[in-house]
Length: 192
Image (cartoon, rainbow, N blue to C red):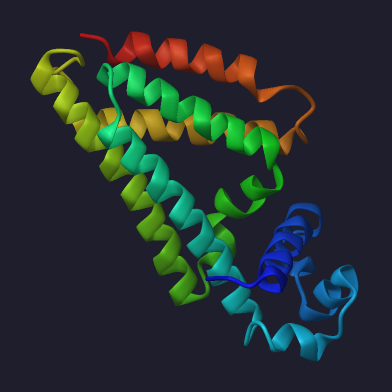
């Protein structure tokens, strides 16, 4: 369980990455932004890597909760995927700075523990959608002429591209209208 100070450090780290990039996240910059000394930060986290790992652990918990809701949800397969999409869009609309961390896997590639964590998170998301799509195929709700893994990659990749493009445009508009269009298109693609 994270302390309030650790949560503050994590939130401020996400903000710094979103505004200054990963190179802007230094213990010195972080301590200045929070208004505490550098040694005080080291009392809560041993290193910058530990801070980034805590960010990823937090996102993994959120993602896992969404995956469980998707798998255990009620309604049609496509309806459950739509709800998952809206939840993700809502989360990123409220916390756009998270996009800079979550969809910037390249910032983790040189640190094995971080790379492993992000690969695991991505794999969990695809696997959860694969399972739900397979269930939908077995029920006759989802087209069966394309395998569930490929359909899952289409779903995840489409969402990722839309959100990343929105982020790169500095969130100049509401993400929901584009999200609704994408969901409608994916629904059409997925239906049997």
